[in-house]
Image 1 (cartoon, rainbow, N blue to C red):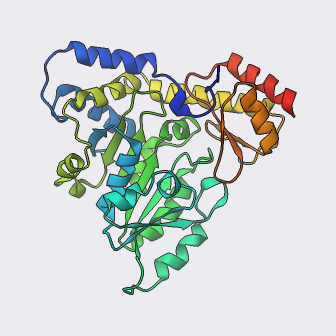
Image 2 (cartoon, rainbow, N blue to C red):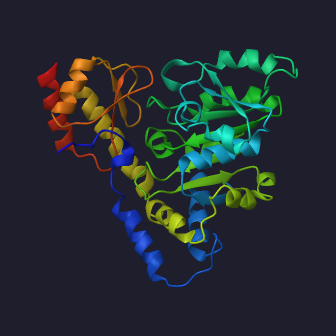
Length: 336
């Protein structure tokens, strides 16, 4: 039987804390709809406490929709979003930002290991407006990145400051924000960086499908629920998307489980017989592996993906065990 332990952090089950919170929300009986209930209010309070920020919070079902809705909020159809060329919004969302944004463009920027090179911002920010291309209106950054690296707050500020100086918006894709926090990124620093909209990933962190959209710029809240409704992201039983955040945030499980995932990635990296291509800072390990050896790994029962840069990606999760890491490492040693 195929093993999906390391294929993605999406393949892991939900944590006990998330499931217990769902069951508790269900046991509370009838509740008002569309996020106006006490469960959603409690979850939003916990998100604000996590960030130490006075922000508005909404819970949605999909990270792709959350990112696309945020970018559509910040960028008009004839404008562009600056993002890393290998970011999720640029490569893995089937054009959703352009769809939700009615034509907005993702302008890809280079940078090692998923982090935007600050120098690459200069040209698009300095380019004059003219009617034949889509000028930038927003920046999207990701922490931790698609290659498992983590921005420090100062590095994010170096990217955000010149964008905000132009009057443009900023979106932070935090699909793996828990892993960035577990690696040392201070979540309470986000409010001071100039981020307008943040997506806090729940699904990859060990929840059932749910993401939190945090509106630091409260002027964006006006009619935001109408945007969510039109996008199919204002669920009538919204409490079931909010509840897992209660379970994961009340006692610190959100970061605690991410720290375990990060530790498992470091354990795997230490045992890895193939060259590692990117720094192992969060919960991903990216290695150089030819097609024959990847096929041999698949034949041995372990499924993993070849990634955007040609590397083979191994993702750890809250549910990754030391025994699984050791089993995989033994298999890898056998196919070198």
